Image 1 (cartoon, helix red, strand yellow):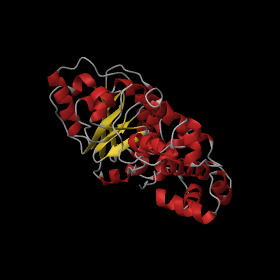
Image 2: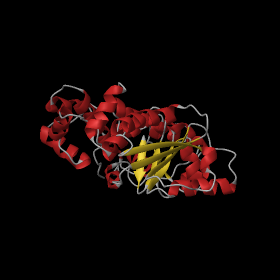
Image 3: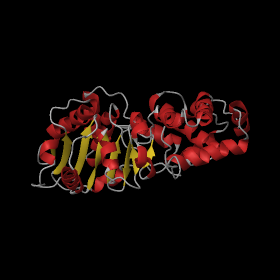
Image 4: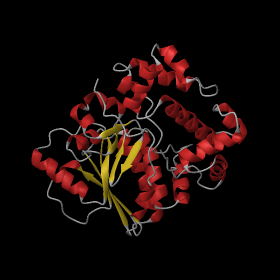
Length: 337
């Protein structure tokens, strides 16, 4: 098990809104993948983007799929505005020169990154040093020295400056649909979402459920147990002292673990878990706002509204109104510390 680098706060801005600055027409998106690879990650990106390109036409969106073999040749032709390496298998067998050319191809785009196992290759190259990085949880054990350079997070996808990363798999569909909503319009996103029979688009802030277990299950079982207790007691929250007693630690020991590995005190982490659950209920259920507040451990509507607004930058009522609007739930809300 690899010791991961402590994060600077668990919830930071996860908004992809800055991608809207890619206003060039036509917008060119380049996906680079090993030739002949058929993977869930590649399909999850291709299907939504191909549908969007067909609807918009080449005058607005051009989507190119380039074999890895071609990408490691000398870069030529017009640069894409967004470039992603995509693979569910490790990119192995590249010479140093080929790796240099591949990075050069990617970094010619204003925004670039990787999805799936290709994230690990990009991180090992040093290109993601200092960046929040959505590495697939199954690869945490292989992260090695990468964990000391990139800031590995359990989120589905990340945008840190001009560097994008997606954990791949089914999350690639959410990632692609989110890109469509930001780069174009929510109506197009809703149209593609409906055509693909996707009930809900998960945003960047949602977590790979297995990531915490992969990170801490063996290394810090007490921390893993404490998080599980929190997740199991949303409606009637436990106190920090109760959680510490149940896992066999002192309050100070528990606070030290949370601060070191999750960048937050237990009470803050617990509050954000409850607020994430309330957001899910606001978007997916028909419960009233008051009921949702009570279901997530808030004794008063004003406390719920204030806490929700502080984290998401929007009130529960405004969140519910967005749900009722066409193309609801498609733009990830900015999270605040």
